[in-house]
Amino acid sequence: MACINPDGTLTEVARRVLGAMARRGAAFAVPEDLAGETGVPLHRVRATVRETGRAKLIEDDGAGWRLTALGREALDLDEDDGELA
Amino acid sequence: MEYNSPSDHPIQPARIQSILPRLNALAPAFEAETTHGRLALEDYRGTWVVLFSHPADFTPVCTTEFVAFAKLAPVLKQRNTELLGLSIDSIYSHLAWVNAIRDKFGVEIPFPVIADGNREVASLYGMINPDESSTETSRCLFVIDDKGILRAMIYYPLTTGRNTDEVVRLVDALQTTDRHKVATPANWNPGDKVIVPPPRTVEDAEARKSLGYDCVDWWYCETTVPNAVSAAERKG
Image (cartoon, rainbow over all chains, first blue to last red; front, side, top):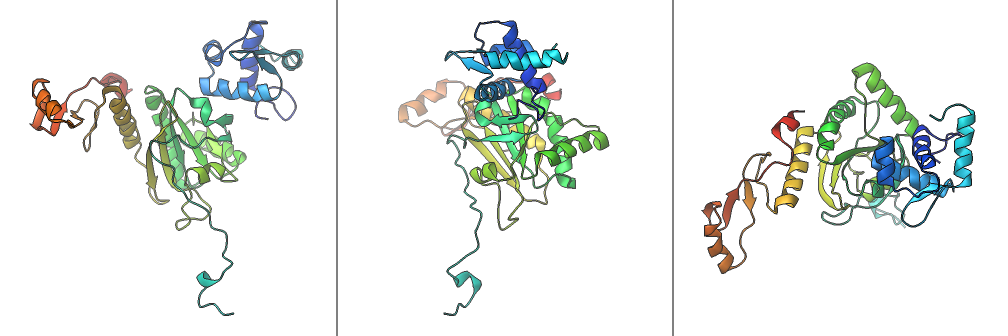
């Protein structure tokens, strides 16, 4: 799973993309907006959304994406490590 | 039963299929491990892609090409075009080579490189030419437009490094064709005259006389079109 490191933490790009979703709370976000907010190229945001979606870290409503409880947990783990900006 | 030559034997060694994709068809879809994580061609929709293969990491000609492609990346980005490299080497080999290019040549490789160890993508795009090498990918380059259509292919042998100026010229020509519904003549460069498609009816041939084209004959007319990227931008 390219969005998750071998030690179970999120990759740098996944952390930035999911972090942007976390700042939106319960609102759904589209990859174009996430690319604009994070500075991550759109093709990498789309890849991250696909991968983290498969890992059930995010969920969609058909138009956009937001964090699941599992996704918030993955970010919280990183926050505990003091790594989430 | 005797066989006159190995090729007569009913049991033949497995041959790698090398089937070329077709121009103007949807480019074969793929999802693959890259140095920028797992990427799919679909992730690039809305963006043009230059997908190119090289024979092997840590080889001299490929290194010169990667340095040249790295310099090309911002030039292509101005044209809404992203580079995507590929070879059959592992992701660890790619990472080590990219680091070596940075350390030894002072060049950052800004584009992802596919680790196509199982040759899935190489097979989809006919990148392996068994009569040249049964394992390595040739120097293939595919231009895929923002709708996922395969627009151009260039194949070079293992021994010959590519000309990246030609890659930019090709992308400029294709995008100019799309934008202005024209064709580009031999050795065309942005700013040069373009070819107006020949008329298909007597009426269109007659009407053309009043359209202000620079015509040698009714079937050979040229015109000028604005550049998508300015000369200043092209110089970077």
